[in-house]
Image 1 (cartoon, rainbow, N blue to C red):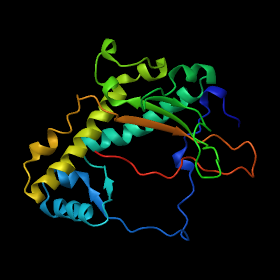
Image 2 (image 1 turned 90 degrees about the vertical axis):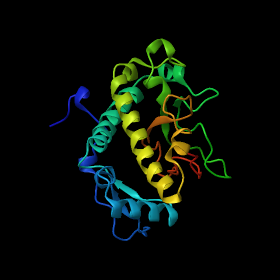
Image 3 (image 1 turned 60 degrees about the horizontal axis):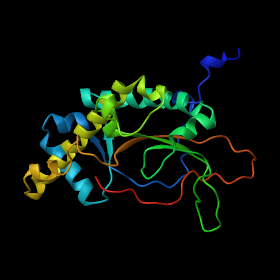
Image 4 (image 1 turned 180 degrees about the horizontal axis):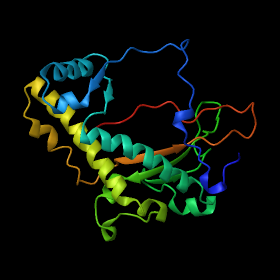
Length: 222
Protein backbone atom coordinates (compact mmCIF):
# COMPACT_ATOMS: atom_id res chain seq x y z
CA UNK A 1 0.00 0.00 0.00
CA UNK A 2 1.58 3.32 -1.00
CA UNK A 3 2.46 5.81 1.71
CA UNK A 4 0.68 9.09 1.98
CA UNK A 5 3.04 11.89 0.99
CA UNK A 6 3.16 13.23 4.55
CA UNK A 7 4.06 9.76 5.87
CA UNK A 8 6.97 9.25 3.48
CA UNK A 9 10.42 9.22 5.03
CA UNK A 10 13.91 8.59 3.68
CA UNK A 11 15.18 7.89 7.18
CA UNK A 12 14.49 4.18 7.65
CA UNK A 13 17.42 2.69 9.61
CA UNK A 14 15.34 -0.37 10.53
CA UNK A 15 15.29 -1.28 6.83
CA UNK A 16 19.01 -0.87 6.17
CA UNK A 17 20.78 -4.08 5.09
CA UNK A 18 23.39 -5.64 7.40
CA UNK A 19 26.98 -4.55 6.99
CA UNK A 20 28.68 -6.86 4.45
CA UNK A 21 31.11 -9.50 5.70
CA UNK A 22 33.60 -9.08 2.86
CA UNK A 23 34.55 -5.45 3.51
CA UNK A 24 37.85 -4.90 5.37
CA UNK A 25 37.34 -3.22 8.73
CA UNK A 26 39.48 -1.91 11.57
CA UNK A 27 39.05 -3.53 14.96
CA UNK A 28 38.01 -0.82 17.43
CA UNK A 29 37.24 -1.10 21.12
CA UNK A 30 33.64 -0.60 22.26
CA UNK A 31 33.52 1.42 25.47
CA UNK A 32 30.49 1.56 27.76
CA UNK A 33 29.46 5.11 28.62
CA UNK A 34 27.36 3.78 31.48
CA UNK A 35 30.43 2.16 33.02
CA UNK A 36 32.52 5.30 32.55
CA UNK A 37 29.90 7.41 34.30
CA UNK A 38 29.70 4.80 37.05
CA UNK A 39 33.40 5.15 37.78
CA UNK A 40 34.38 1.70 36.51
CA UNK A 41 38.19 1.74 36.76
CA UNK A 42 38.71 -1.01 34.18
CA UNK A 43 36.54 0.77 31.61
CA UNK A 44 38.33 4.05 32.27
CA UNK A 45 41.64 2.31 31.65
CA UNK A 46 40.27 0.81 28.41
CA UNK A 47 39.16 4.18 27.03
CA UNK A 48 42.53 5.72 27.86
CA UNK A 49 44.37 2.86 26.15
CA UNK A 50 42.10 3.24 23.10
CA UNK A 51 43.01 6.93 22.90
CA UNK A 52 46.72 6.19 23.25
CA UNK A 53 46.54 3.36 20.71
CA UNK A 54 44.37 3.78 17.62
CA UNK A 55 42.95 7.07 18.81
CA UNK A 56 39.40 5.95 18.02
CA UNK A 57 36.78 3.86 19.77
CA UNK A 58 33.08 3.07 19.68
CA UNK A 59 31.00 4.42 22.55
CA UNK A 60 28.01 2.32 23.62
CA UNK A 61 25.40 4.84 24.76
CA UNK A 62 22.73 2.55 26.17
CA UNK A 63 21.94 2.33 29.86
CA UNK A 64 22.42 5.92 31.05
CA UNK A 65 20.49 9.17 30.75
CA UNK A 66 23.10 11.07 28.75
CA UNK A 67 23.54 8.24 26.27
CA UNK A 68 19.82 7.68 25.82
CA UNK A 69 19.33 11.42 25.22
CA UNK A 70 21.87 11.26 22.40
CA UNK A 71 20.37 8.10 20.91
CA UNK A 72 16.82 9.46 20.89
CA UNK A 73 18.01 12.88 19.81
CA UNK A 74 19.92 11.52 16.82
CA UNK A 75 16.78 9.91 15.40
CA UNK A 76 14.65 12.98 16.07
CA UNK A 77 17.23 15.33 14.56
CA UNK A 78 17.45 13.13 11.46
CA UNK A 79 13.70 13.49 11.00
CA UNK A 80 14.03 17.25 11.55
CA UNK A 81 16.65 17.24 8.82
CA UNK A 82 14.18 15.63 6.44
CA UNK A 83 11.77 18.48 6.99
CA UNK A 84 14.56 21.00 6.35
CA UNK A 85 15.80 19.29 3.20
CA UNK A 86 12.25 19.09 1.80
CA UNK A 87 12.12 22.90 1.70
CA UNK A 88 12.45 24.47 -1.77
CA UNK A 89 16.04 25.15 -2.79
CA UNK A 90 15.44 28.90 -2.83
CA UNK A 91 14.23 28.71 0.78
CA UNK A 92 17.22 26.63 1.91
CA UNK A 93 19.54 29.05 0.12
CA UNK A 94 18.44 31.77 2.55
CA UNK A 95 20.44 29.90 5.19
CA UNK A 96 23.54 29.12 3.11
CA UNK A 97 26.94 28.96 4.75
CA UNK A 98 28.66 32.32 4.64
CA UNK A 99 31.95 32.96 6.45
CA UNK A 100 31.14 30.22 8.97
CA UNK A 101 30.43 26.50 9.18
CA UNK A 102 26.76 27.12 9.97
CA UNK A 103 23.83 26.82 7.62
CA UNK A 104 23.07 25.09 4.32
CA UNK A 105 25.36 23.63 1.66
CA UNK A 106 23.78 22.32 -1.53
CA UNK A 107 24.92 19.13 -3.24
CA UNK A 108 27.71 19.84 -5.70
CA UNK A 109 29.02 22.92 -3.90
CA UNK A 110 32.48 21.43 -3.33
CA UNK A 111 34.92 19.38 -5.41
CA UNK A 112 35.94 15.97 -4.11
CA UNK A 113 39.06 15.15 -6.15
CA UNK A 114 41.65 16.53 -8.55
CA UNK A 115 39.33 15.82 -11.47
CA UNK A 116 36.83 18.29 -10.06
CA UNK A 117 34.13 15.73 -9.28
CA UNK A 118 31.33 17.53 -7.42
CA UNK A 119 30.18 16.23 -4.05
CA UNK A 120 26.77 14.59 -3.77
CA UNK A 121 25.68 15.61 -0.27
CA UNK A 122 23.49 18.33 1.18
CA UNK A 123 24.56 19.66 4.58
CA UNK A 124 22.67 21.66 7.14
CA UNK A 125 24.88 22.62 10.08
CA UNK A 126 23.10 23.85 13.20
CA UNK A 127 25.20 26.00 15.54
CA UNK A 128 25.62 24.60 19.04
CA UNK A 129 25.82 28.07 20.56
CA UNK A 130 22.62 29.31 18.91
CA UNK A 131 20.66 26.36 20.26
CA UNK A 132 21.59 27.03 23.91
CA UNK A 133 20.94 30.78 24.07
CA UNK A 134 17.71 32.81 23.88
CA UNK A 135 16.49 33.54 20.36
CA UNK A 136 17.47 37.20 20.57
CA UNK A 137 21.11 36.19 21.14
CA UNK A 138 21.38 33.83 18.18
CA UNK A 139 24.06 34.67 15.63
CA UNK A 140 21.93 34.11 12.54
CA UNK A 141 18.39 33.20 11.43
CA UNK A 142 17.23 29.59 11.33
CA UNK A 143 14.26 27.98 9.57
CA UNK A 144 11.11 27.29 11.57
CA UNK A 145 11.77 23.56 11.18
CA UNK A 146 14.84 24.02 13.41
CA UNK A 147 13.46 26.64 15.79
CA UNK A 148 10.35 24.55 16.48
CA UNK A 149 12.56 21.86 18.03
CA UNK A 150 15.23 24.08 19.56
CA UNK A 151 14.95 22.30 22.96
CA UNK A 152 15.74 19.03 21.16
CA UNK A 153 18.98 20.45 19.77
CA UNK A 154 19.83 22.03 23.13
CA UNK A 155 19.48 18.78 25.07
CA UNK A 156 21.39 16.89 22.38
CA UNK A 157 24.41 19.20 22.29
CA UNK A 158 24.51 19.55 26.08
CA UNK A 159 24.50 15.77 26.52
CA UNK A 160 27.13 15.31 23.81
CA UNK A 161 29.32 17.96 25.43
CA UNK A 162 28.99 16.34 28.85
CA UNK A 163 30.00 12.97 27.41
CA UNK A 164 33.03 14.51 25.74
CA UNK A 165 34.07 16.11 29.00
CA UNK A 166 33.70 12.78 30.80
CA UNK A 167 36.24 11.25 28.43
CA UNK A 168 38.57 14.26 28.69
CA UNK A 169 38.41 14.10 32.50
CA UNK A 170 39.57 10.49 32.36
CA UNK A 171 42.40 11.32 29.97
CA UNK A 172 43.48 14.21 32.19
CA UNK A 173 43.55 12.00 35.27
CA UNK A 174 45.58 9.31 33.51
CA UNK A 175 48.06 11.93 32.30
CA UNK A 176 48.37 13.51 35.72
CA UNK A 177 46.80 16.76 34.51
CA UNK A 178 44.24 18.75 36.48
CA UNK A 179 40.89 18.14 34.67
CA UNK A 180 40.17 21.86 34.95
CA UNK A 181 42.92 22.44 32.38
CA UNK A 182 40.81 20.66 29.76
CA UNK A 183 37.47 21.92 31.03
CA UNK A 184 38.60 25.54 30.89
CA UNK A 185 39.25 25.06 27.18
CA UNK A 186 35.90 23.42 26.45
CA UNK A 187 33.28 25.69 28.00
CA UNK A 188 30.01 24.95 26.27
CA UNK A 189 28.87 28.57 26.42
CA UNK A 190 31.98 29.89 24.65
CA UNK A 191 31.44 30.72 20.94
CA UNK A 192 32.90 28.05 18.69
CA UNK A 193 32.42 26.33 15.36
CA UNK A 194 30.76 23.39 17.12
CA UNK A 195 27.62 22.28 15.31
CA UNK A 196 25.19 19.46 14.63
CA UNK A 197 25.63 18.45 10.99
CA UNK A 198 22.61 16.96 9.26
CA UNK A 199 23.55 15.25 5.99
CA UNK A 200 21.49 14.02 3.06
CA UNK A 201 22.75 12.17 -0.01
CA UNK A 202 20.15 12.78 -2.74
CA UNK A 203 19.64 10.07 -5.39
CA UNK A 204 22.04 10.28 -8.31
CA UNK A 205 20.57 11.77 -11.46
CA UNK A 206 22.30 9.10 -13.57
CA UNK A 207 23.47 5.63 -12.55
CA UNK A 208 26.97 6.21 -13.90
CA UNK A 209 27.49 9.35 -11.82
CA UNK A 210 30.14 9.01 -9.09
CA UNK A 211 28.91 8.70 -5.52
CA UNK A 212 31.35 10.82 -3.51
CA UNK A 213 29.55 12.59 -0.70
CA UNK A 214 32.50 14.54 0.69
CA UNK A 215 36.13 15.14 -0.25
CA UNK A 216 38.82 13.40 1.79
CA UNK A 217 39.51 15.34 4.96
CA UNK A 218 40.54 15.17 8.58
CA UNK A 219 38.29 16.41 11.34
CA UNK A 220 39.44 19.11 13.70
CA UNK A 221 40.09 19.60 17.38
CA UNK A 222 37.92 19.08 20.41
